[in-house]
Image (tube, rainbow, N blue to C red; front, top):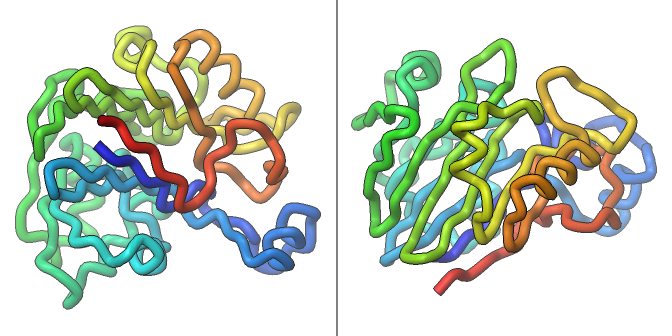
Length: 240
């Protein structure tokens, strides 16, 4: 199993349009970005995409134009599913997997394009491309939002998606002790957004869950580029 962070930014990305803060200035001067968050999972010659960000076209080009065989939507916010339209006239449209309420919302917008969709029951594992996948609820009011546990052999990764720190205990058990945890960390310490974690809250949660390794994702332009454990667009992890 190979994991690639296609994007690690929030809804506006970094650099943010029209912003001259230290992080955005550094990004512009050094030609680096945080594209909107999505993750590519490669296993047994197949490619699974977690969330289809509005930057999907650029992300796929940067990663060598992989053919996407399936997609999981975690929730119905613009920065996590609106890039699905980039599959139009590019490749065979992948099968989409999502919890029912998420599918109803996102699928209604792309009803002209979706050919096949599969409803996922939270906490009910299913198999795909040699992977065992489990969707679990997190806490991102006011919309339903889900994290994902993905296993390949003895290795497991966890993706919290967008969430506050008060994730249900049954969900936390699924991402305790994973080999790689990808955790929402929108703002620096001291900044609070009621439906996300800041960097300090993300580190506190990670300490509780004790993964072998972790990266912060879904970061705003306020997150400095030199923080430890921040994810980088294009960063890859190989689990044999």
